[in-house]
Amino acid sequence: MEKLIIGCDHGGFALKNKIIGHLKNKGYEIEDIGTYSTESCDYPEIAKKLAKKISEGAYEKGILICGTGLGMSIAANKIKGIRAVTCADTCSARMSRAHNNANILCLGERITGEYLAIDIVDIWLSTDFEGGRHQRRVDMIEKDI
Ligand code: RB5
Figure 1 (cartoon, rainbow, N blue to C red):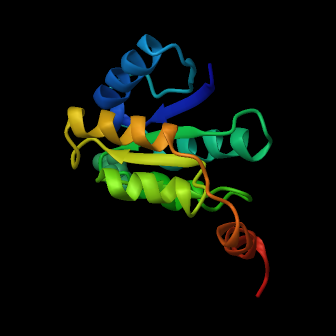
Figure 2: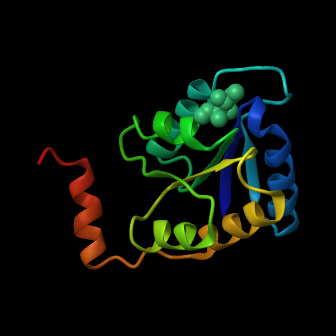
Figure 3: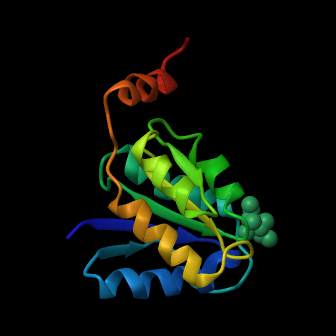
């Protein structure tokens, strides 16, 4: 089974625990890089720590959760090779994998309810990148054009 890395700030702590429970039940091996409480912390630290692990090849995919999912994706996308997407619907989750080969899924605990968030996670993890013309476009993201 695939291994995954997951992180959150205080705004995503409760949803992170629910998602970890769900994914462990499905057999995923999870590294949880925190935060580990609802005490206030700074999302860029968590986002960049997780994004660097993916950039270095330790993991193929990760999940970041904050209040909105927005700050996490902005910060993670500063790291080379990262394609982080904030999704609040299942269609965006599917397309972010199929066309954009997203490697980090960001969720907002204050935006998306638990059941929908879990559907988004399942669809995001089970959708393959289509490659082809999309590969050329994804390659262009890292280039100076
Ligand atoms: C924390 O209050 C909140 O700003 C954070 O969780 C996130 O939503 C930032 O984008």
